[in-house]
Image 1 (cartoon, rainbow, N blue to C red):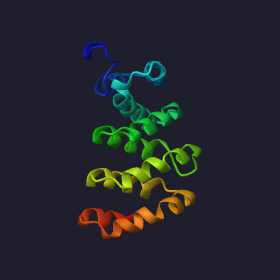
Image 2 (tube, rainbow, N blue to C red; image 1 turned 180 degrees about the vertical axis):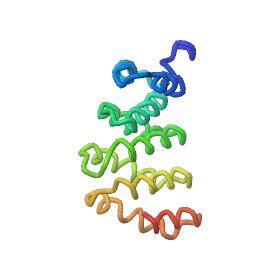
Image 3 (spheres, rainbow, N blue to C red; image 1 turned 60 degrees about the horizontal axis):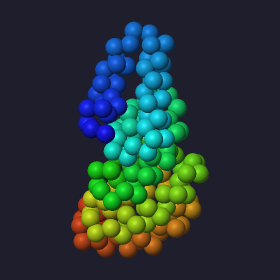
Image 4 (cartoon, rainbow, N blue to C red; image 1 turned 180 degrees about the horizontal axis):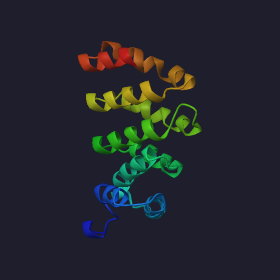
Length: 163
């Protein structure tokens, strides 16, 4: 699939929503975009996952349900690249709270990212941990967080103390 056959961009979706004159028009645009995102998810189009998640976060901020994007957050967090992880953690912090059972699946990815050599990935994991940590997650990750108190980068030490 080439770049020109991709689904709409976030910017275009925002323009379409802002151009709506009634709430019914807005709901129709959101329904259409959600259907396209679900089709993309079911079709395993990995190339557009970060774009779809950005659109889902905007739709969530408008107050529409976006529960079907929770697993996409986890997939992006498990990916090796920083940009994907960044979008996945942002989606995780926005779309989920500490009461969601899906969070049990993210503990292992958090543990791996807290032990990562890249300080930026460690920082992402610490921010997410500070925002969505449950009691079970805190118990499972306490050793990694305690070890990070002696990290070489002062920014990481500051994030550890804040989370």
